[in-house]
Image 1 (tube, rainbow, N blue to C red):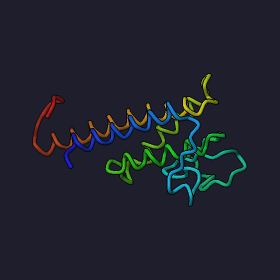
Image 2 (image 1 turned 120 degrees about the vertical axis):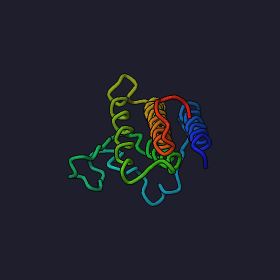
Image 3 (image 1 turned 30 degrees about the horizontal axis):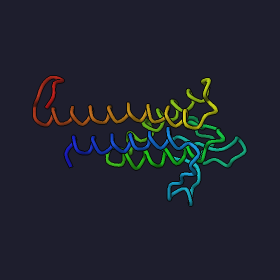
Image 4 (image 1 turned 60 degrees about the horizontal axis):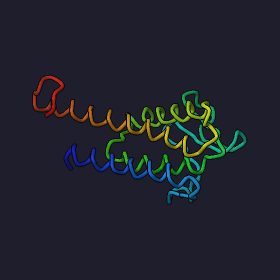
Length: 155
């Protein structure tokens, strides 16, 4: 699949997620994997309902742990973003990507709308948009190196 098509599909997927987060905050959305693991606990990011919830790798210093009563809906969103970024994620970058999403979530949580699930989801989606742009740029740089193209202009 070409870079442009894959990027466009991921961008459309993010736009659809943004609409769901913005228009339907009361929906009980569940990713199929939430049956097995209801809360996001992967890629060095954990989103759990409270501090007493059993966490995996709780003592790993590099883990970002988010405590929120909106752990269900935020976990759904993170599973969906993992699916959206499936072709882009590698063992080398997934912790960095989800770490950035976790930091965006933590920052939004500390803000004046930190109690609003839709605002938290939109903050994560804003960070996901930035990650998608970084994926595209990295892919374009690899392509330029392969073809010997110099500079930062379009391919």
